Image 1: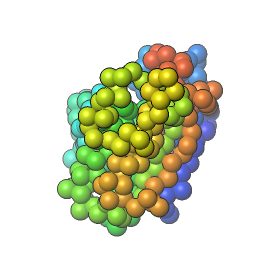
Image 2: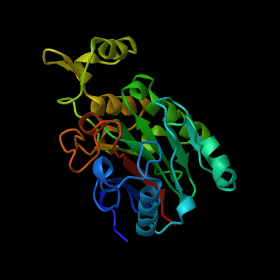
Image 3: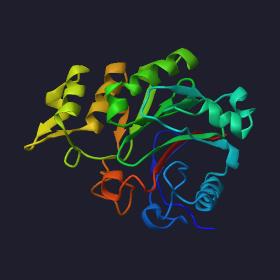
Image 4: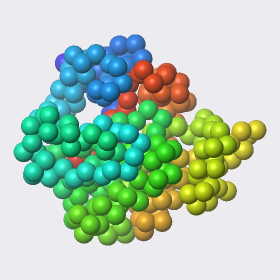
Length: 260
């Protein structure tokens, strides 16, 4: 069995947080090597083999690796005892159209899939709860990070000042060229455009900074926010990039787990 190569994040003792790289799996072509996303066209047998190898590395059962079918929306779903009691078809229904998942169950790895979009991982130090967020430009404009923090506040009693956060690999300002309609969407949504946009003939948006500012706006301490600083477009040999490889390619999995 091949062993996936992970980019690990140092959040706290007892918390496993990471993003997968392209290395250490059995997928081929634009999915090579490591992909566990069911919705991007990869062969199912490769996905299943890669899932098993990741579960083996994490020390969890396959049904304890949980991630949604994302739609660039703002739905947040809690993974709790009731969810874990569902069969796989019911779980799939619960996770359809969801872009952020949260839990305080130990031994359950939750995560999101990206390939240029921004993964954001949160850890509540006070209540031992975690959240994984998929924040592409549409989700960023809709403030999914804010929605997720609010969901943790409502569900777990989370205080934003007690959160630690990771902004994982995604497309950088340098390579995220956008049309005027995307720039206008951020402007109309009230973002500080001097902080998140630059013009190089055409507009470029800094999704890393936009999501960092959302976290700070929520009350997360800036010192508690890590940014991986890895541009998926510039490093498409190591991390999947839909802009570089096309949408028929693999996805990065960014996961977080409370260790038993």
